[in-house]
Length: 269
Ligand code: ATP
Image (cartoon, rainbow, N blue to C red; front, top):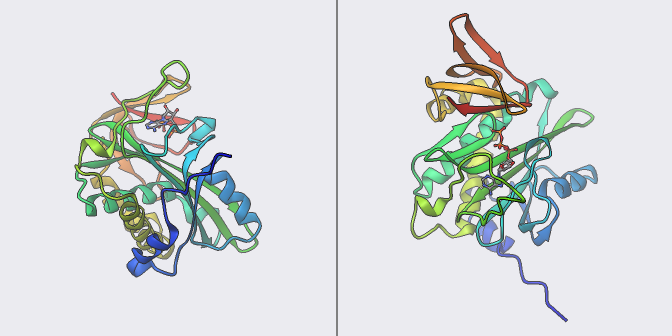
């Protein structure tokens, strides 16, 4: 009978690395699941507490936005989801996917990986290649909002099968920027510590408090960009950062336009 391998993350070892965030996260590790975000959302509806984390070596149905797939393998990726509850209603969560990017960037910088940029609304870039993706899913509860924050990071370049899963954009991996790679426990602990700090700041003061930090790492700040909908160009202009609610700001001859639609994809022009 074949044995199921132990997950690459050992929750006890991880807890010991959480420092100031110890006690704020409850980490579960699986060798395999469909999607960590789907499973964590199910657990949330059954009462899992804020700070629950689910990390899986292999996701058989890892997700991006709009039903797209996230591809990773156990050795090449770090994929996990975090459940967080926020007081108030949906309006309080504007800009959440952007601030999660800030937390991951801070953590990676602290682990010795410089040069990470943020792409509106939910990607981490390294040398203009996609290093990681963030997927935030929200659900309202009685007096609060529930967020499941999924994060996928490439440690090594994922093996691609262009026929089955074409990458729409260049892909990047941490291994391009740092050698040796940080231990995955250190990396995950650093991200969770940064996430707790950023989410506290966000809960207290909203995206406004983190907006200038986001803009200083915005991949295309003050550069020409185009916005695509279903592959077709919807708007072109100069990227002027994000508004107080996380909306993308695009400048053109006619002024500054705000873009909030989750159906839009941003590209360098
Ligand atoms: P957008 O620019 O519209 O945000 P996106 O292509 O970044 O689009 P996401 O939903 O954020 O879309 O992520 C899913 C997409 O990411 C997939 O369609 C695929 O092109 C790409 N992708 C999947 N796995 C990986 C990976 N491991 N590394 C980099 N890119 C990946």
